[in-house]
Length: 182
Image (cartoon, rainbow, N blue to C red; front, side, top):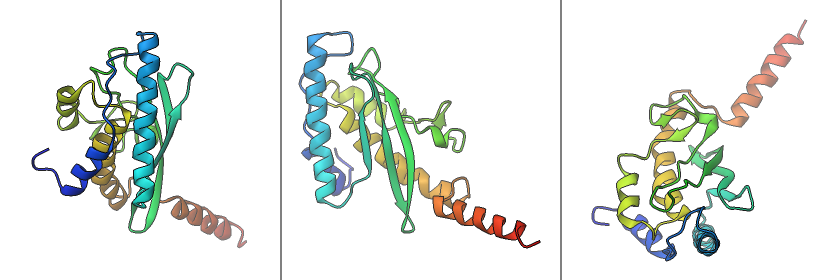
């Protein structure tokens, strides 16, 4: 954790580490791992809310806990930009980190793979490998998605690649008003 800012260190140390090394194929051990994942996610969410830094909502999309969906958001210039978030738990989890997807941003930045999977290879994957199986979904969000959003959303907004929902709505209203003048 050398070289990290104090805020990141503080946040990371408050997210519970996981102890069960199990993936989706491991039956009862996977169920135990999912319980740990939920505890870690709940702790991370509560910590974010207590610091007025709430920025995501996710839940398992299937009973097995292998597909997750939700929303994440980033505030830039006092405007909230919200995105769909989804990912599958890899069969080799927890040795392999989940690939976090923001489908709405697919093709809008070079730091993304096909399907809206955000690029985490250079900075996050080695960190995950070093800390597996103690890291879980909450750690992927904290150390993978959060810095990615902080780095990419301002660039995408400033370059015009993404627009705030209110800008789009007001543009449509202005267009309708223009068309209805005749």
